[in-house]
Amino acid sequence: MYEYLTGKVTLILPTHIVVEVAGMGYKLLTANPFIYQEEQIVTIYVEQIVRENEISLYGFADISAKMLFNKLLGVSGIGPKSALAILANADQSALIGAVESQNVEYLVKFPGIGKKTAQQIVLDLKGKLADIPGATLDLFNEPIAIPSVNKELNDAILALESLGYGKTDIKRVEKQLAKEKPTDTQTYLSLGLKYLMG
Image (cartoon, rainbow, N blue to C red; front, side, top):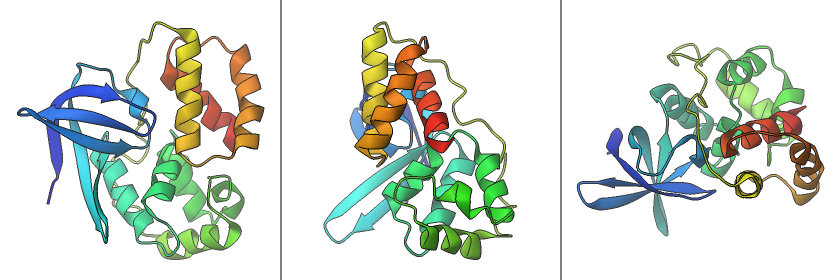
């Protein structure tokens, strides 16, 4: 039903953003809300998912992320939350490369993805991702400036939790992140994802 929305970001939380369009606020679940800034005018690609007891809107920075999300949803055992956790990884080309090279070890590093599901991803998607435009596009190329360093780190940790990473893994990377000196939440989150995937 929806293809994209253009409007102003009015709220940013670890699990979603709110975009105001013509006086109406749309709650958009996103892989990484911190690539946006409050008051920023954005165009976000949208996928509406209707379930028995809820209707949700998922937002994506570009059409390739939306297409990849939909392809992941076509895999048995992958729901919207798992698909978002996979998309939170900044490197789409590495994901596509892992699928094409049948690198199950890479895929099981995502939260909620076991060996069986990783094998299913390869089985269902191998050879079917070539039509995704700009597959090497960096999804996280928008700089964010948030004044409080503690707030940045805390927001990144909350975002990792919302993506489904376990407390043990998060505690491990939190110690590493505390030693870093990023200037924004996005950098903390990108580093956290990198450490979790390492």
